[in-house]
Image 1 (tube, rainbow, N blue to C red):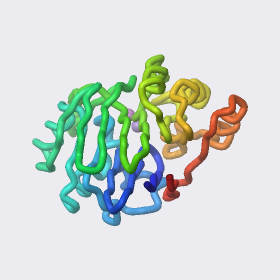
Image 2: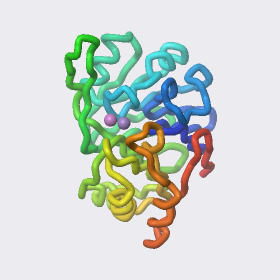
Image 3: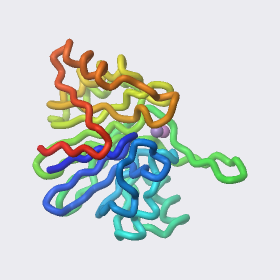
Image 4: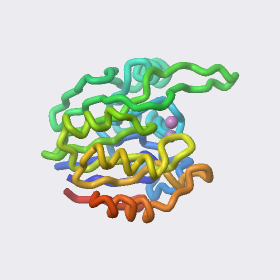
Length: 229
Ligand code: NI
Ligand code: MN
């Protein structure tokens, strides 16, 4: 399986011609090396309703016919407002597709959409995903603070690659993300959600060095870079 990082929280999983996109924010993502029009997807997983995560979902789903999978409130909003196909699910549940399994787990964050007239619409709980695909397990935490049940997620699942935010300000920062990596016990930890906007500027290499001090294997993926498992 190839895991491609597109900057921010946008991760693409490709295995035997199947493509899954998580949080496809490309237009307006200062780190993206591809345009939304260049990407193929059969499923789009959304961790929550913020604009830097929904991103280009509508355009990609309409062009490719991809199904959007998210928490029920966000799924029903997307289906009603854009007409894209959705599957709504909730925390703890797993959705199986022919080539993968997507389990939704909790995240500690917020989730809403602000309308043009300033109304804030609740989009359900924010989430992370534990994805089994191509014989590997990938955890994408979504936007989140550090929370103790990352320990549970790490005990419950044998994670090959974990994507964790290090940007701080809107999510946990690097020091908390070291604790997250320790609890998740992934074979490889990859930082995300940093350097896209000024308030989330971070030195990812120093995060990897902090992990190495604790014998945790981390790696920075540059935007557009693929990791082959
Ligand atoms: Ni967010
Ligand atoms: Mn975000």
